[in-house]
Length: 120
Image 1 (cartoon, rainbow, N blue to C red):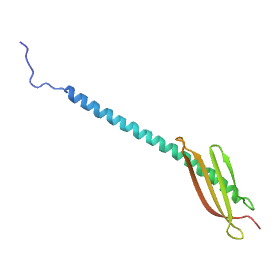
Image 2 (image 1 turned 30 degrees about the vertical axis):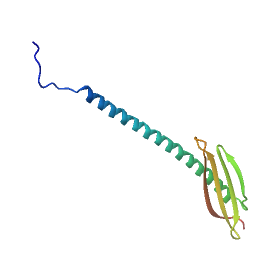
Image 3 (image 1 turned 180 degrees about the horizontal axis):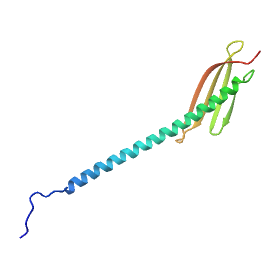
Image 4 (image 1 turned 90 degrees about the vertical axis):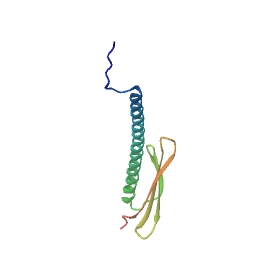
């Protein structure tokens, strides 16, 4: 006759399957969060580059005696700027930069500031 051990230790199949289901669900959630983080990093990189493009144009306009409105493109960014006379040596500058996001949506950032012209 076989002798039966009363206190058999171990996991049942149901316990193992439940723990595997929880682990798979957790890993899928982590993967989803990682994808969201990557999208956020991509968006942040684009907006930082956009801000640098706008700042570059603002510095160019500050170093011109009589800044004028215009537009141009740098890489994947299109920018336009409007210069409005506010006072004798004071100009309001509005710079708008646009680009297309990876999901084909138009994105834009705008800055508005006042600059003093270099006129003597």
